[in-house]
Amino acid sequence: MNIKLWLPFVLAPLIGGIIGLQLFEAGRDEPMVPGAQPDAVKTGTVAMAGELANIFDRSAPAATQLPDTEAAFNAALSQAPDPSRLPVLQAAFVRWLLQAPAQALANINRIPSDERQEVVAHGLALLAQQRPGDFLNYANGMTDNYTNYMAAAMGVLAESHARLALELVQRNQGRADPHGVIIGAILPGLIRNDLALAADTIAAMQDRASIAHLQQVAAAYAQHDPKQAYDWVRRVLANRTDIAPTQILNDIAGSLVARNPADAAAYLNRTTDPVIRKSLLAEISIQKGQEDLTAAWTWLDQYRGDAQYGETALNLLYRWSYIKPEEVAKLLPKVADAQVQSMAATHLSRFWRQKDPTGYQVWIASLPPGAIKNSAMQP
Image: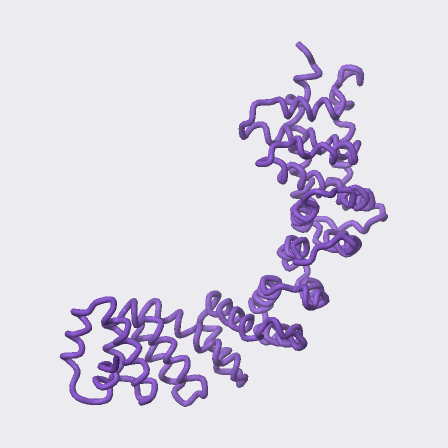
């Protein structure tokens, strides 16, 4: 039996287990600062993974019996492509990457495209955690798909070492990331580990911060303190003209309502901000309308004196005119605002006559003379 060909497959589960354990358990440690030496007590799993490069030597009686790292990688590539190959290939690539980063990275295009990003990303994440300085040097040498690989690797690293991932990205600002793809990859991990730092990072991006970046931070704040979420969005967007604050403020309202409608309603009753009240009125009424349109209308009608009532009421009735025309028709007589009633009746009739002409005619025939019938019969 040729041990050079079979040994990688025998040892792969052990290697893969160490890699997986290290990446998973690393979340319990403090993030490593580039150049600093880890505390041996706190970073036992890091030290264990640091020995990964010598695992073959510790698993056989003689080094001469072991395949070199490139041979192990080649042997993994030669295995038939099926789900069992991925962990073997990943283990072989990681060992090669830790021993000879430049050589390993020069061969990533040999990895099939459907396996490449997962294999390379986890290898780069481990290299970044173990040797952050070397990681940046080698990462900068990548010319093809740099953004994709960097984003994938930093996303993996941020799950357990968010601050280190952010530091590496910030130290590498010379490489273009115009759309914030790399920051976007580490943002979920950064939010879970340090929301304030995530908020400061996105704010510092200024015009480069996308709606998606802002939405994630705002939604996270909203889970703890709605006022802080609203204040942060207004502060970040104060000097931006490309994003309307209402776009993000409505997302905050949606997040609040989705998490706890009762808490959202309580906050509505506390705030006097017209923009916030408008977004909360709309989101709560929509959520209630999905369950019971009549109940939603009854709830909304208590805010009839609110400056935002008219627009919210119309939006609620418009929203259901096509889907539930019969229910909207039953609500129209209860609408006390004459303008809202007239506009809603006209809107309803236009949709209903297209969707169900017979049902529309039955409704018209049932209406007594008056404002609703006059509005409903408008062309």
